[in-house]
Image 1 (cartoon, one colour):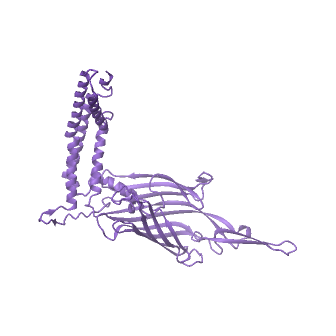
Image 2 (image 1 turned 90 degrees about the horizontal axis):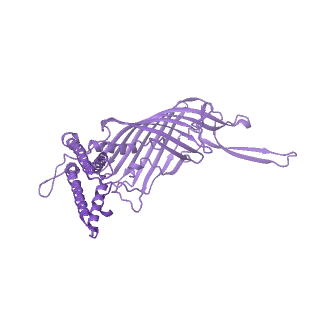
Image 3 (image 1 turned 45 degrees about the horizontal axis):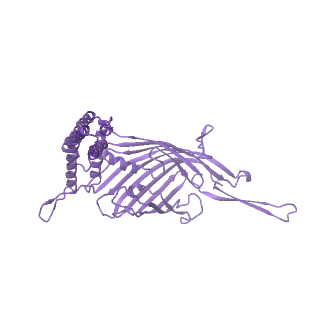
Length: 489
């Protein structure tokens, strides 16, 4: 008769108590969200307070990306370059007010250091090791400057019968209210009725099983009983406490409401403005060459403690329901003062050293030649001072599908130690989609995103490279495209 016994883990009284607790919890939750939708500004917002915080967290995490210079989040990474490997460690913390539409601040601190033989040495004796960088950054999104909207609510449209056609925002409000009513009904009264009915049915089947003889065919009853137990188990009523079941239902509500609001056609465009900046210290090390020194002392190395600060104003705009030429755009202006010296601006050059030797008698001459990259400081006086860098960047993705774009950057460096330095960057952003890419699916990813660029660095040749602007150019491909998570999502 083992098949007719009640499962020891199945406690109908405990399950019935859970059903009541979940219903009570969800009733309080639904009263709260319904009241907000009906009585405060949520009813006039494209995105309600509950969804707004999640929306900002998603976008601001992407937008606070520091364009490859320093990380903006807690992370550990290895950076591989042509001549060295660096470890990059950072710790970040986000500060948010209780008001979901208040300002957000992200603070980041960290270190970058070279790795040799598997070891990263931060200090050598009492000094910081050469090539080590210490930094502290901030990103600040001001209060009520996080987004702007245009819902076209003032546009009145009529169909062929003369009836008013709802605007996208009016449609969103109707869908939001409809879903709120549907969810709250199904998570309170309907929830209690549904699972109590299943529990009563299970009890009836259990009673029938206990009264049947062993010879009876009980296959159908057992199947119905297992189906009910499976439904109760999937609802969490067999193993989870009521609070966890209610929390899962609340998450279902917020996820669906977020999708309704964030993906709504009521959005025409979204704007963000934020400040970013920080303090950075780097122990610089470079090789020098001085032709006036003796042969053994012409090559030398110098260390320099470089300290700088940076402040940047950032603007981002994305058109979400508009087929205009520019779909998304980013712009920044930045000011960065830092300590410098008269040698740092010089470019590394290939220094050739030739040694000729002739035995005695001098009927044969042997010539030895070596090459080393170094800064040629011959006849250059060493001075220290401040350098002021002003820069601006503009990035735009074009068209409705945003498969191509442009990336422009300009720099002007002024210093009391040298003439002004001008540099410019022109880039073409391209997106190559995979065979299964779906631009309407936010979870569908492009396969390859990259930038083809040309840079003209130090166009006035302050670094004394003795090359023309065209000869000093850099042409390349960048696969870490700025804001690729936004522009290529």
